Amino acid sequence: MPVALQAFGLSDRADRLYRELLRAPDTADAELAAIVGLNCEQLAASRAELTELGLLRPSWDDPALLRPVVPELGLAALLARREAELLAHRQQFEQARAVYGQLRAEAEADRRHTRGESLLDADAIRDRLAELGAAATSQVLALVPNSSPYGDPGSDGPSSAGPSNRAPGNGAPTDPLGLPVEELLLRGVELRVLFVDAVRNRPQMVEYARRVVGLGGQVRTVGSLPLRMVVLDREDAVLPLDPERADTATVLHGRGPVAALCALFDGLWQGAAPLCHPRGRDRNGMTAQHYALLRILQRGDTDVVAARKLGVSERTVRRLTAEALEVLGARSRFQAGARAAERGWLH
Image (cartoon, rainbow, N blue to C red; front, side, top):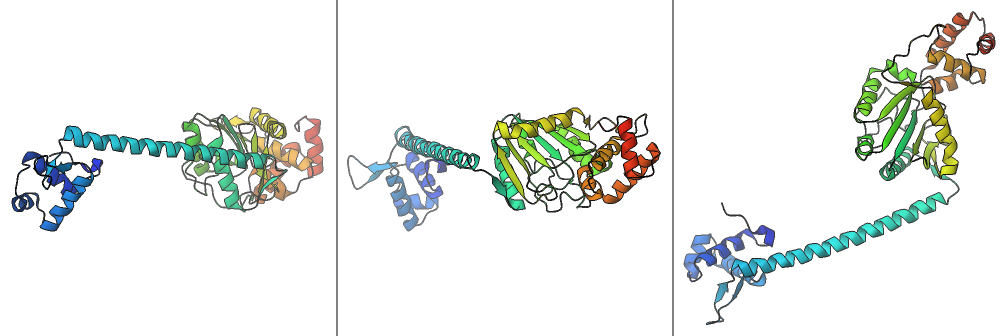
C-alpha cells in the first residue's frame, strides 16, 4: 500500500489525483474522475489544491493544460517548505521557553525578596510544593508526622483520615509528601523522608514507604517529629505557619534561613532507624516512642501536642504514658520525668 502524502499537506483526494496524473498525465477528465473516485467539483478542487502546492504547473505547449511536477522537484520543494516552517516553530518555541524562564526567575526573585511567603490554603500549598519540586536539582528532605497530605486541614491531627495507599508521586491529594516523588527520583534528586515510628503499624503506609525506597528514595522513622516540613536543595523550606494546623504554610528562602532546619533534619536523621529495621523494646523495656513521649512531656506539652508529634491518637499517648510509668515505677508524670532524667533517658 502506497505511503500517504498527508505529511506534505495533501488531502486524500489530492493525493490520489496526483498519483494518477504522474502515472497517466494525459487521461481525460471523465475517465480520470472515475479512476480516482471523484465528481467534477471534487476533481476541480483537488486540481486547485495541487496547483497551490506547486505539484501541478501549466504545460509549456498549452498553458491551459496542467501537468504534474515530478516528485524530485515538487515534493522536494514541499519538504523544504515544511523544514522552514519547523525551523520557524522551533525558534518560536525557544523564544517562548526563554520568556518562560525569565518570568519564572523574576517571580522567584520577587518571592525571595519578600519578607514572608505565606500560603493560606491547601491548593496554594500543593501548587507551591509542585513548583519547588519541579525546580529541585539535588536533594529533598521531608519530615512527615502522619500520613495525611500536606495542606489537608486535618493532616496534623492524629485521628485524621487513614493512610495513603496511592503510588508515590502521582500528585494525588492523598500523597502524604505532596511532591512528584517518582519524577524527582528519575531526575536523580536525592530524597530523604522521615516518618514517625507509628507508621510501622499501618500496613498501607509501610507499603507506600517501601515503594518510595524501591524508586531510590531513603525512608527512616523516629519516635516523634516536631512539625511537618519539606526542604528543597537546602535553600527553600515549606513548613506550617502554625504547627497545630497544616492548611497554612510559609516558605523560607536562602541557605542562611534554611540552615537551622537542615540541621534539625540531619540530627533527627542520624537518630532514626531505616524502615527495614525493627523497632522493638530495648533492654530497659522501652521503645523509641516511649523515650520521645517522655521528652515531650518533660517540656510540659499536652497530650494533644504529644499525639501530634508522635503521629498517634491521644488514647495511644495515654497508653504509652501508662507503660512508661510502669517501667519507671512512677506514680505520676512528674515522678516519671525525674526518674527518666536520673537514668539519662531524656538526652
